[in-house]
Length: 388
Image (cartoon, rainbow, N blue to C red; front, side, top):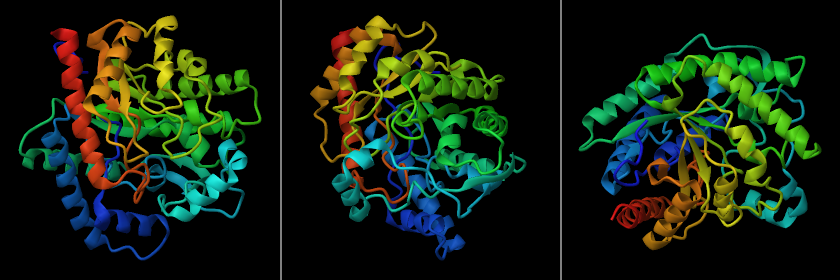
């Protein structure tokens, strides 16, 4: 894993704008509407090429495929694994914010800014297995080919994959006898995808928003200690899935939900940071640009980052249309450096993805690229301050 040896490197968290043509097709697919495979192939190729070119153009060091072929960052596994389907049973429950702020939640539902319903995804209805790797192979092949055609290159490339823990909370269990069995079954299957990505030469980013979001979601009726214990089970399962991968080839992303909402009930970062430190990864990827958690960067003073870990600091928000001034980005990076105590272990990033679900419009597509430009410029300003 590349680190910031003579300047602060830049990256983002994964999903990028897919463009209207591809987004419309993916939304149709997710909502079981007419889906044109031939049209998808053309739109996907164009969107992938554009995403790579735009990242290189703005100066992103550690880039990816923008998750172009996926409807979202979690339910895509239901297309690659056996054992998932749709039933008429109860779906995932609403988070605490939706109950406390019903006017906000109704407005979000009516706004159309999220066109795929995250509360009605596939469910586990049979034994899980990952027997066909053609899906992840096609994604890796397309990324390789698009990189070869691009005018320029990244310092390093990464690819995302969902964690067993969040897959277990988002894709409701209707088959396994208990929750823990389900989590470990997911880990055994996802291990195949994780190892495939790393063998193709990409950094593996594990997306695990359960560490933040599920305190006010699935575990809202539990105590904090019970929630932390559940997250420790998630990490144990994840580490089993990562057992054959060097930890310096893995970065771990956690967040509190990529939505334009109150975040009133978010669990404080210091309460879950010790659990994240148990992950066999070489970097944490955490959101510190948003106004609910930006102050928590100071937690690294009292809970020092493990020696083997770097920190990808979210310094640009992903659910609004403010373009952060480069000086603001620089100030956030310098503050993070002081909290961690080592400038070489800081990488500039975004709070989350810009297209968590295909068709998301929390941040307008043209604004996304302006935000990433500001991220790069801010990293340059911070580098000048820190290295001189």
